[in-house]
Length: 327
Image 1: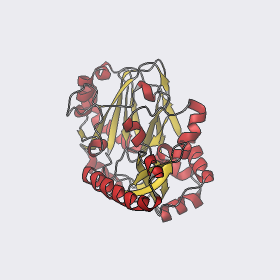
Image 2 (image 1 turned 60 degrees about the vertical axis):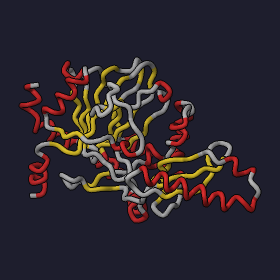
Image 3 (image 1 turned 120 degrees about the vertical axis):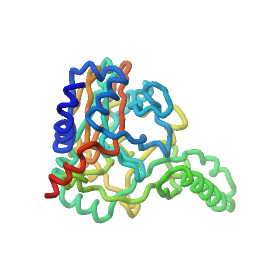
C-alpha cells in the first residue's frame, strides 16, 4: 500500500494524460478487499453502477451494496465480443473506472482499451461533421413480444398499439432517470413486431472535463446492430438465452432518427479497431481508466473468467489537475 500512497497523484495524472494506466504484478489486488484498499488509497471516489436505475448488475461477492461489480463473465456470453464503448446510461457517466482480474480466462477474454482522442483524429472529417450536426441517439431496449398483433383484426391493431405503447412508456419512464421515446418497429429474423426504446439525442464528441481535449464519446461500435451481426460471422451468433438478454438489444441512429449507412458504420468500425489495444490480464492486474478519454471492451473467451469493476465519480486532486490545464 505504501507504493500507492506515495504515487497516488502521479498514477491519477497518468490516467488523465494517457487515458489508462495498467498495473501489473501486485498481489494486493488479487482479492476484492485488496482491490478496494488500492483504489481507496489513491483517492478514487466510488459511485453507483451506471446501470443502477435500469437493472441490477451483480456484485463480485454477491453482497448488495458492494462497490465492486461483476464484469461480463457469463459463460453464455463468452462468444459475444463486447464492442468499444464509454460507460454511460442516459445521464449517468462515471468519470473513471478500475477493472480488475480475479481469474483470467483459459483462452481469450482480453480487456480492450482505445484512446478516444485518436479515434476522433482518425475519423473521416465529413463523417465527424455529419454526426456532430445531426447528433446521435441510441436504441437502448427492444420489447419483442408483440407478434400476436399480426393475428388481431386490422381495425383493432392501431388502437391496441397505441394503448400498449402508452402503458409501456409510462412504466419504463417511471423506472429510468432519463427520457425514453418508444417507437414501433420490426426485428429479429422473422420481423416480429416490437417496441424499441430510444434515448435522447446527444453529441458524438465531447471535450474532456479536465484537459479540454476533444474525444470520441460514441458507442456505435458496441451498440450498432449491423456491426454486432457482422461480428457473428467471426465469433458465432449471439446467445440471447434469457428474457433480459432479448430485451437488452441496442442500435444507433442519427439524432433525427435517420439510419446510418453501412459504409459509414464500417468506417467507424475500422477506425475504432485500428486504435484498440488488447490487454491480457492475469490475477491481480488492474486497468485504471478515464471514462471520458478511454473506451473499453472485451474479447471473446473460453473457460472461466472472473473480472470485476468499480466506478468512480471523481478523485482526490481532480480540481488541482483542472487548474493546471486551464491556466
